[in-house]
Length: 488
Image (tube, rainbow, N blue to C red; front, side, top):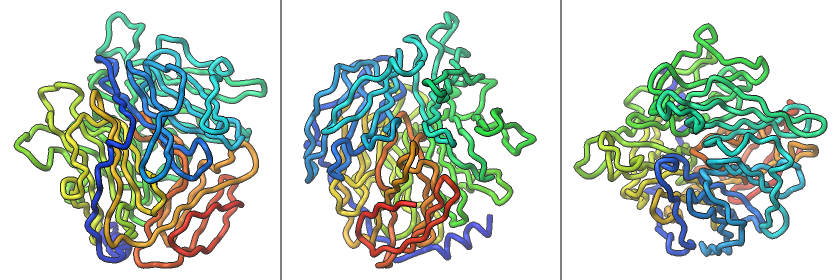
């Protein structure tokens, strides 16, 4: 671990600005994630540009209430856009399934999931009958997608408690579902065993192999289950001989980002109690980060409630553009769970020059104590600073504008390529040594499509390397403080 801290110190950029956010939730239409015990989990948001104006828009799950689509009018003004009355939603992920340039939505539900095909001006058409989705007795809470060489996406759906099992809910986890493209459509196959998944992410792991990581909630598998890793090429779950040690947590969400500069992504797993950071190792395995790194975020950081926190959506992002990757975690009690803190503020963990993380959620203005669930980091006003949206259970949707003074320079990078994988999902983008991958999945019941954001610190120029899914490597240069679109 000593070498990790050496690398992190070498990566340190300019001095850190004090992050500052302004609550502009009153500019959002009224929306809440509602429902009983079936909606204790979920509550995801999908962030996408649905009308081509380069301003991110928001699709928010509604639980037993209607889902909402809120179109960004600029200057942090959002209007509700007409949608079908979609109920029983737990989350959604944007994905361009047919490569037509309009983002589609894979909507997770209690009941049959839905695929909405995007069109001009934020229009969406029901396309569910074209896909062999499992019937209306599934409780879906996780999603990820990836491309191989066949032009169309492969998709995985993670299901929670098996609603068909009369002995449930404990020890009654449902199986996962894999949707595989065929010449004339898609084929659905179960992926078993399932241990009540709440997040999935298909990407290259520390070994460089393409794998599907599945994070599971031991609240309902209770014992005998664990976190899972499925090898997409070999078609099998990994075990101890592969260096995949069994870990059992109350898995809620997954975030990944290279924070050490070695081109391997670290992984953040949210849970009740400890939030588990796993550091990618040179031998392709993972090691738990030391407690001193400051990311375990196991209790509320203000107030007198010493009970454990409950983490949901985690996401890495450079919030002050200093060239060091920070971490946001939405927090909130499941409902009235007495073993865990009731007033549980969101975390804003700012990375320091020595590679440790410092909690700054309260001073930054992000310490809401509503029951947070899904969230997203996106530049909603195009000023080069990442803003924050959080969907709460039985409380209004929140949005915060990043007004951090003296923030560093930045670059936003989008990829476009010919063929079915239009947005080059699976590519890696390295900007001045900072690497990110284009992915669909992870988070808690929601994700986003759009440019990848890089903080540049004091640098006014960016050297960019793209490793495309085809294996082609391209090099580019760009001035700071702009959005760029690259092609192979």
